[in-house]
Length: 539
Image (cartoon, rainbow, N blue to C red; front, top):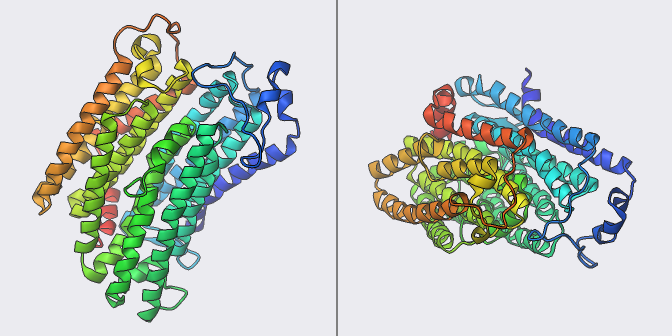
């Protein structure tokens, strides 16, 4: 397959699918009220996000009466969205067969570039996207049945999700740091509308909080990128290549250390905000708890990782300018602070979707700590952890979305006996939490074990000891609260047991099986993983 296709299809196909949904929305001129029964038409009016009163929506604690299922055309269009993750996976697999052995490939004078790290992230994005997109039709059907979605909502959802995938793939494929910044900023714009998709007061508030905090982070990253551009120009690099990542890595020793140090610090703080790291982390629990469950899965499973991979790209440049000590110090401080905050908030958490969001902060802090250690074993463990966390968290969020639709509440104290009344979502949530706790045979067990080994083999064993103590607190909180939801008899007022259909259950089972397979053996991807770790390590 031509390189031009392999580098453009992961972005172009999701954009084309998004455009298809946009055209379908334009062609459908049926008023929203016409799709609902007469008694429900008035509250479903959809005003603009600002400038008018917020619409009335059925609260989650009191689900609305059941509505007719979506028309077959709407369901078919939802399943057609699997074309995007399929294209990403096919291109990633094709590149994985050559890039680790033959070296990077590029297009458009290096604007798009694929090395082993790029290919690894494409495979992770494609796998998580396949699970989340496959879970989308069942989720939207449940929202429609509860009166919280109509056909127009479904079209808007699919349009934004595929635009989101295109932006993430562009960030992964970007060989120019300016294009990288644009792509990550695009993810902020698109996901803000997804977070506020239900247009309730809490979802709108979460969307604005997400926009404000992440925009501040992206502004810091932009300023850091400008400073790095200035340092490159002062070093004699041409303006067309001053933000080209391979050129900056090759000429890192010529960059001004003082300017580069300030620029790298701003980039770590800025992109760290998108990765859910302190101090600009406050958007994460609100956005993850209010977004549709498959969107929360994408945000937690891959968006955080894509933002952190951007930090790793800058780390390679910084290590070439003034050695690894500066960025290591930054990452260790940020990782331990984030981990301490996440562990404390998990201990006090009463909402299971927010609990999963704080779990994402915990795992991103472990990834940051592994990147700070910086040995080949630690970096390989970081990349494996990114993949395992993405798969496990996707299953956890999609299962929690099903629980939310069945029980009508996200409060942990109001959910009991899930294994008895909803065995499908309950078992999926339980196994996903076991994976997130780092228990065998899942991939996170192997990656966390490797991180601990690498940490004690380095001079940062003290940081690993502190992290282990905090992880134990998070482990206790997450396991205790999940067990209270899953075990025991169902309450007297609980609905009768329900069976999960194949459309809702297959993506969850596939995600758990893939996560377990990665934990049992990563041998088929060993060459790719090793080559990607070498790139992150600056070798």
